[in-house]
Length: 194
Ligand SMILES: Nc1ncnc2c1ncn2[C@@H]1O[C@H](COP(=O)(O)OP(=O)(O)O)[C@@H](O)[C@H]1O
Ligand SMILES: C[C@@](O)(CCOP(=O)(O)OP(=O)(O)O)CC(=O)O
Image (cartoon, rainbow, N blue to C red):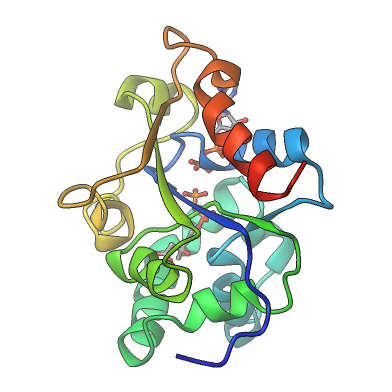
């Protein structure tokens, strides 16, 4: 384990299926806490940056929510897994490098190794959060089943055998996000001495 100087006070590691609302919920937390306290980290950020460089692609579009990234998702998954097989914490380290806010919100954990890395580096501070919703709702948000993506570890790696500290149901007929996130926000505010 590398010598780490900076220690975050709280690390919330989010996961969830495509279009479950991971970005929506983590952006909501960032807006509530502010950028001085909270930083949203995306493990896919450094992956897409390197993939775009190696394949001469438009990084801005890869990072965006549109169809461009979906064209390359299956190959990015395979490319990323090649990197992870050599070093499971590779993208976690890159995504956390230089971050100095006390509260870290990792928006896109996908594999056991993602969760295990944070729990190993920050055992006291790490809590796991699962964002869930129905397939119907995901479809309404633009998701459709894609073989090689929705049946891959990238989408299924945390489907079973994981105890999540928090579960957020991101559905219209569920309690409001404000209500569901109240305890997590309180935890974050206490961690940041707010
Ligand atoms: N509670 C919500 N209310 C309104 N729009 C939502 C909500 N949750 C998700 N969305 C929208 O659904 C789409 C997918 O959400 P997103 O956060 O990008 O999913 P993920 O990051 O899990 O793939 C986005 O357009 C987002 O704005
Ligand atoms: C190759 C990926 O990093 C692509 C992730 O892209 P996004 O993070 O944009 O995914 P969603 O927000 O869930 O739609 C997945 C992986 O297996 O590493």
